[in-house]
Image (tube, rainbow, N blue to C red; front, side):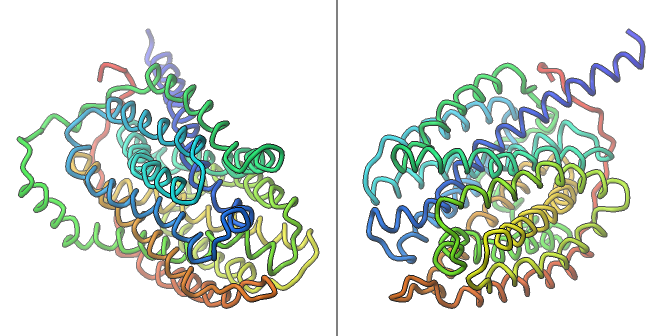
Length: 418
């Protein structure tokens, strides 16, 4: 086989892997996202306050954060494929649990289990991108994987809401369970072992693992990257849990039009995420991140201060919010996967995911304390959350200069036996 033929075959395998990772991203993101636009329906059905609803969101994220911390002790000690197969199976079972439960308490418990497995899946996706895709194409690959997030918004959430409207509130989880089963079979068939990080495998020691994690927190490069992730999660999840309720109760959007928010926003970002990835590979990830961080301030403030508005204006603002907030994550995740050497990448990304999810959970709880529901149904003080999120974007703009890439020679690894 000629060198060109080998390269073409390698790129084909890489594309199939990235497509599968995007589908994995689609399922676990939809599992997380679908609950939030169901907020108005669940608040009425279970007769719960915004504070109790925020517990459903934060229960998932805090559980995901704790499981990701546990993952930092073992994910670097096993093959990526084996870890993904078993974690995704746990996620699949948890999603079935969300479909069959009834009542607020049972749903909360099912969400905790879903978060436990879902949090580590997100980490593994980044690990596999970092291990299997060369540095030169990593932002582009990250953008394609992030398109799975957009696909969840453009198809998964609207279709899930449609199912909830025509059947029951938990019908979307039944639909997601079927898709997840097919994706799990795809993982078994397509994902390579990716065991090169095990070459220097050491005997497991809790003390040594804690010391290694401590080193990641002390090193300037990794500490700065982790700080930025926590700040961005703080900003995003001061807003996202109450996005659907605020559009219905404050901006006057009819509930039946909520799917169009995700259809428009997700539909555009399916195309913009890969574009941002290619742009970041071409002109520099730090530069693109700074531009997107500053640009995100306008839609953040607009969406959190939106008065009663026509539907077209609401869709314009929410689509801008999806595109720009999602767009700043593409170059940042590419920066993140290159911020540490491959041997420690699993531990680092697990620790990052842990802080990310816990930060999101804490932010959801804080938002639940800030946002109040008036007797008229309006959500009060949502604008305060927008101010916090805008401040976070400014802080991230300055901090990103402290994160640099750790470059090592990398041979693409896409054979299942490697």
